[in-house]
Image (cartoon, rainbow, N blue to C red; front, top):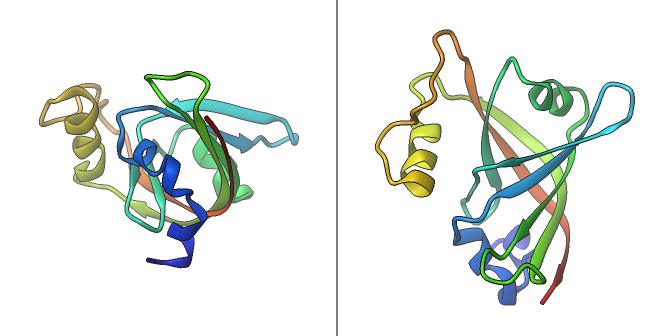
Length: 135
């Protein structure tokens, strides 16, 4: 098990495999917080989520890689996992492979149904550095 994976308490690892949304907070251009729910994946080392290059969240993490995210248990709203970390890398997703995999996980469909012509998608990799949890 990687050092990153050991940051995630065993009692809450199931949330990383769930279909819960992760609310990702980034730091805006004037220092203000910005938070949105996203589909996510966990590879044992990184929380990964998709973003288009036209979005504010993408610009935020390019400028300041510090993020926080929280995942609330869909079965118990008083049980959650919060992760604070660093965007370690951003990879292009030109064939939309990652967002299509997330559509399969969250919607049960083979292809993301909301593609817009010209969207440039990336995969954001967050390396956890600190966690808190409850429940």
